Amino acid sequence: MNFQQLRSVREAVRSGFNLTDVAQILHTSQPGVSRQIRELEEELGVDIFLRAGKRLTGLTQPGAELLPIVERLLLDADNLRRVGADFSASAHGQLSIAATHSQARYALPQVVQEFRQHYPQVRLHLHQGSPKQVAQMLLSGEADLGVATEALTGYEGLVTLPCYRWTHSVVLPPGHPLLQHELPLTLQDLAAFPIITYEQGYTGRAHIDEAFEREGLAPDVVLTAMDADVIKTYVELGMGVGIVASVALDPERDLHLHALDAGHLFEVNVTRLGLRRGAWLRGYAYDFMQRFVPTLTREVIAQALQGKAPAV
Image 1 (tube, one colour):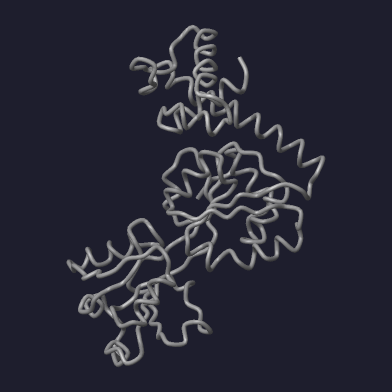
Image 2 (tube, rainbow, N blue to C red):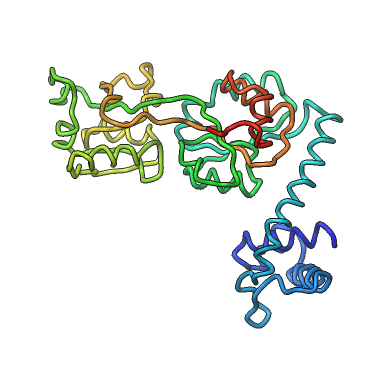
């Protein structure tokens, strides 16, 4: 048994059982991948994959039982390399961060800048995606840490820790009728106008939909986008009323927009930090996280990863 065999099994599952893709990922040939898998199956005495001719179509029952062990062995091997690297070159390496568009655009720039000043020899990789994509990048090992909404809590293989709470705001172009509204803004007020907001699965969109649904309202959502800057652009064009994260408002850049607080209309959102359960992190990764959220000390994070502290 060797690690190349284990990697072949893991990547076969991740690639949807496409051995051509596995060969590209592992920088080898397709026959080589097939041989590695067959040799492991022969050594274990069980078939790991279902087959249709030479094509893999799924996992057998033994394969499904073996996969978590394979994942754990490869994670431990990666942890061993990280431990060695942390002691031999503590200020060199790479850090991969997965985040939603809003977090990457508005919450992370300052901490990334500070981190780079203190760790110039660490290469940073910033990946963007939906909360689901952030979770998948963490689970696959593509990302070391993730920053997204509370949607990350739905994955057993992840440990998540709260970062900060935030609400939504309504953005309007100059002269919009709602700017003359003296009473507190209501959902009925908003529903009277076309609405531009986030795509499903992004930046608290679920809380927006839930609020309207509770009031029995069906808002006319005329445009959705992943990024608040795109939403604000179309609000400026007069296409509708925008609903964005309050953290996405920039007084210096949004000179042609007016913002109204909507914290009383929609449920408070929580940005969370996600980590792969059982992962061993380099020292500079802990430093990055504490720069982002000062209360997340190395001790707090390490205990959560080991299951010794609640991941609330």
